[in-house]
Length: 497
Image 1 (tube, one colour):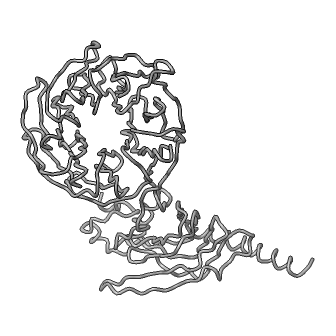
Image 2 (tube, one colour):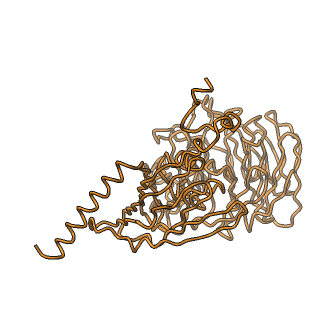
Image 3 (cartoon, rainbow, N blue to C red):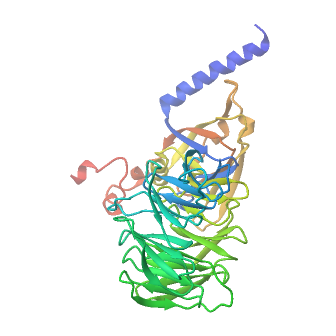
């Protein structure tokens, strides 16, 4: 037998005997730390007195960007919560492309009644009333034939209703189960219910353009270009009040009603601002600067924030529940509109120049995790310190944990730091990434001690700690144990019973 092989067998046998004695005389704690990200992260173990976090940050988000190839110019996108799908209208090809949250095209709906009759869809909305006959249907307006049509959940056109003039905007009002359309020329707001195919003139307002709805009471919000006011009308058509925003430039206005805080959000593209309005008092509560040319507003249930899209800057302003601007983030290139899933916060952004629908998701992610019983072990060692007899470190990848810092804090707050090189303790037992850290013998883990090290990307590190526990309860005088209130592993002495 050659000398190298003999030495390996010799070391291997000695380690077996060593571990046999360790297991007979000591307890074992196993702490497994996993880096769930693609970057190195600093990890802190123990440190109970300082409430030291395992990692900072411990949680975050993972971005997932996908794209659906529409093959045609997208115009506007909406989200249908009934079938959890995104609908995109394409006004050049007169189609609706239906896409799921994995960016897969599941259906293409042809809107033309025949190949020679054009539709030119310019608006799409979703029926959100569970009690409606058309719950989950989408309503669409077309400028070519001046019509309104509905598409059911089987992607079949169920109604085609002619209207008098070119449609400008379209909303669905769940309160009275009706669709409202602003039309050019007549300065009118037309109402179409789900019960019949009659297009009825509901309001006549000079310059009526963009519509918004309060689904709680059915109030209709109408922005008119004649004086740039937003006027509020109840279900009977009576005007309740208005909001003035003086400007010399015609504005494109976007509306969003927030069901949680019961506020109406109104964005003005030329004024680069958004009004937060109390719909009960018709009063302005806040005016926020939301970037250049805000064109659309949506609510994201994933982070409970309002998203305002800036067409000019290609950014999203996020507003929290306190009506404060949190930040401005960039997602992907988009135009005209976007939609957000009410189930998981997936965002769909249409890009007409690229003929694509981008699907963007921010998934909550735990950056660093430890085994489930770690907190229980840590708390136990805070009151009953452990005396380390040996430690073994096993890493799942080839990259080594070079250094372990042992940081101890005194009662006065003074810290001492000692670095231990794990690279010097590579195990002779096998070819894996294993370190037998004999130097750790004699170290104590309690509430004042921290271990700090850097874990490599997508790596799992396991610490096998062989220890003897110092039961502090046994150090207390018999009579003083009643007054301490500390519950230790020994339980209640027989003398107390």
